[in-house]
Image (cartoon, rainbow, N blue to C red; front, side):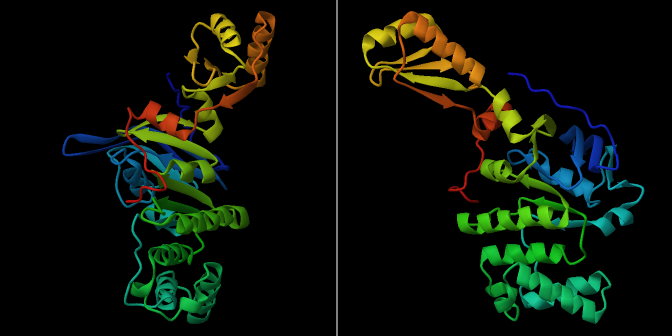
Length: 328
């Protein structure tokens, strides 16, 4: 099934991040091949894709850490090539691996970031205390970061990113390697950043559930190409695999129903029929009307809609996505 991608319309007052035609190659290998993005202010935007899809390269270009070979990108109206310092003043970046200093305590790490942001000592201490409380690290404030669990280190890393009150935050696979409980804690923190502070957040992830839970819009990147974009529900509706599962009281009704739907898949053991459909009320009503006319009323009807697994597999040629139980 083909997927269309809406081109970026460029920067506007309500567009926090925009990119047009981003391209990047290494040694003759194309990593990004004409990526367009338009991310509304105050939203969570997820870049979903397998390893090597170009997610990290995209973040590095948008955060001025890497120059694109061609194309343009802007963050809050600032061009990443012409005004990199202006971009850096309004963004925060959290990479795939926590960048905290293990020999420093949590408070010392935060105060160091405050110094780098040129906050005076009093304001730096106040900001550090605020973030320690927000991330539930107050009791661990005096401990060296090397003693922290993976989840605590990731929380401290994100807290350090927030010291300068960035308006746009890039999170590159922020929950990689975390256990399910720590991942859900990070999700709650991410949601609160957008809801309480109105930041714009670009999230890269391999975890389908993470994109589904957090993102207002999702773009699927594969081999450097943006192959689809939309809300989670929009992408699910456009993926193959939706169907109705009809169960019948006896084989006679099952056979009659099968005659009505030649493309259906029959399950004799369960006395069930799988009928392709998008699960909308109109489709459901039409199927039930056909069954009633044929005298083959179903005992039960279950609607099965595609999930992001189906979207991912349909778009990335079967590359297996990461799952919560399979941590790197």
